[in-house]
Image (cartoon, rainbow, N blue to C red; front, top):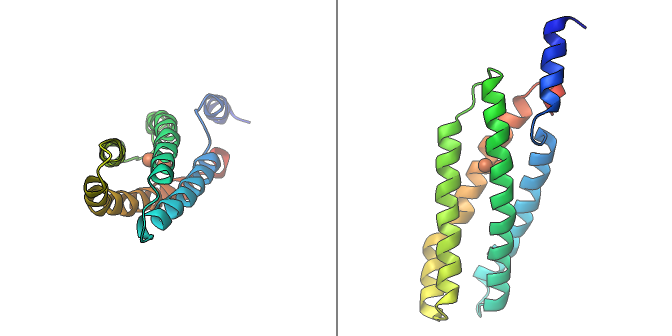
Length: 147
Ligand SMILES: [Fe+2]
Ligand SMILES: [Fe+2]
């Protein structure tokens, strides 16, 4: 192995997470989104379930995006073209949607929850799916050693 390759191999070991792990986490988030959709589409909304699912998505998501931002920054330092600003901006926006739903459930008002689901819930599901699809493109395009 030449020295240059050795350095890349060595530094890649210090990276936070792996592309394949992020892809698996995306699949996990998609399963949670399907659960959220089921709750949103049922005639009578199960509030405890809704609260539980949104909190679960949020805690999973918070951890996921912290690791991801570190990972994408590392890739950027290695010279890969990564739209970091766009990714970080979208992370912030998605977090706001989740917080809005959580606070609407906390108000205990059925009206507030329904309005929030119509606005933030539908937006959240659509935007997370788009965000994940764009990131998956980056992960699949990476060289095998980083996957
Ligand atoms: Fe992300
Ligand atoms: Fe992601």
